[in-house]
Length: 213
Image 1 (cartoon, helix red, strand yellow):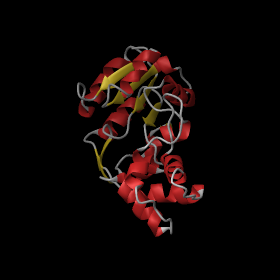
Image 2 (image 1 turned 30 degrees about the horizontal axis):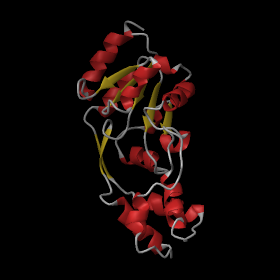
Image 3 (image 1 turned 90 degrees about the vertical axis):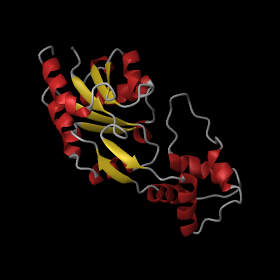
């Protein structure tokens, strides 16, 4: 193998999450708590597209929420929309078996990053704090809400590769979703599907690959 950096997906790979079951309702509760009068068809407004984004671009959920309200003639500040969204997502986190060991093994061979598709600000950092993983184990942490691009868009992989000081083609991406994480192969990198190589098997695999780097 010639890859010189390993990038992990977060949700579904390193951690499992008990997601907010009805995000529209949860956000509505937080908006109401902040004195925002919601439209009677909020559930419909929430599901409608309101921002014309480029293909592959991440639309931050607070921006979507503010635009959904504006479409019904309701204006909110950016700060209100952001805090309502952030506070609406309080998931229960469980760290995947051998996640820490897999990250530690990857670090033996070179830089390690974390790349997550997540439209909710602060959620990736909060998830890591609630897990048993050490955020300091990652040389860089990139969320799509921050870099502006979602996997499998090449620009998402290029963003984290740049922070790790390598080319996108030099990445091994470990994840659970071929449709998104597997997009690294279009950049010339390698995808490791945890359905085929579970996290407990990664230390041995990384040990073998290290001999080829």
